[in-house]
Length: 498
Image (tube, rainbow, N blue to C red; front, side, top):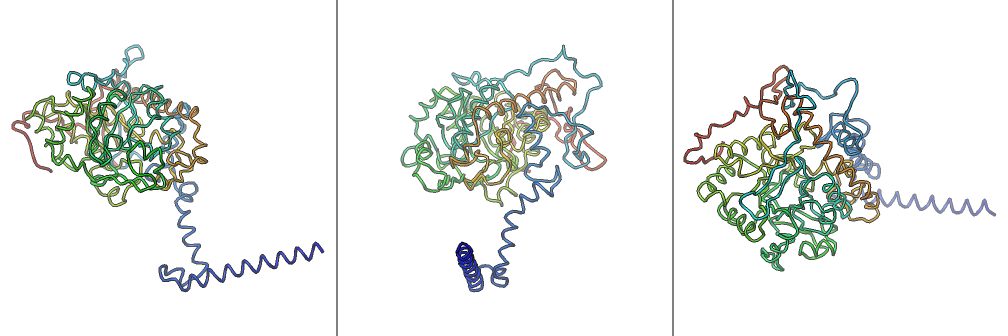
């Protein structure tokens, strides 16, 4: 009897499978969208299956340690080790090909700095002398803008607590200030994006009273013009991520796609931008800066000319310069691939313009854009940056595995999802320590580079301390590639682009 029942169930199951196959074949033959499925019904689905899995096979089975983009396995592994406080020591030699154009080579001193002669890297004040409550930048490495909404509540909580532990500031991103940003007690920079999330009225206009309130909760404000991944286009938060809590914090409708304008509608030109900087600083007493990607000389030259014409009190207190390779969230590929300058070219242009204008001491420079390693951060300091921001470095510290699903709400590590089951894997009590270790160990390695170059701390690094590989057999000093400018060339102002 049991055999007959088993045989009957098997027959039914087999019949069901046959019907399913026939259905799929008929559907594939009759559909008109996919050529492969129409010509190879049923079996053609294997092509799409392997296409979806291809990037994961390459990541774990086929790609070399230095082959992947946007971050290769060697870089991710280095960040993981620092975050776990396991050190950055390797054996048997580097796998980094130092013949590749663009490689960074630091100039070691024949007589490096002894332990007893080393000095702590000094903190730098932002907005000192121009606002009532300057922000003291104690850490060279800080948490770049990642919005609550784009990343999860546990991720924001871990970043906030880790930043406090390491003495970093934390940028809110354009998604507004959440309670999770404040939970850890770190310095918070409130970013104001083009949609005015968190500081908008019901009709989307700028809410001055809300800005005044936030002045009692945050350390500084940042007007975001654009970021590296999508200059010229606003941010996108899919409807699946717009929960009731996120909608309340941002001031937007729940369960609808949230799309920011591609620029601030109320800031049409440079004078309006500087007026907004001064307004926010006057209302709150806090420093106010600008974040932008750079396309050429025009923006920074126009900014410097306007400040020289209007006076130093009209200047932004800091500039966050994002390279085209920056951006941790979703972005159109055409913009991510081809719009704006990479940080290696953008940062020297900005620093040089500020030096020529005599504004470098007035405006602090923050570099951003794939600067996740101590070598890249030290390079930025050599160029002239005062601080370094990183988003994806801290995402790796949280456990990100570069699954490339940031925009799908299915992040397997709980960093960029609002799925409670997936968020469960991100344990704040464990991950905040990794955030702190990453920042602290980055600072230690940057100082180690500085001491090897013969200077007492990281802020004494200059362009002559680093060389850039041009081809397999030749490198040039950064001070030769980008010589320090002669301020007299700035007389009367410089305009135009190159």
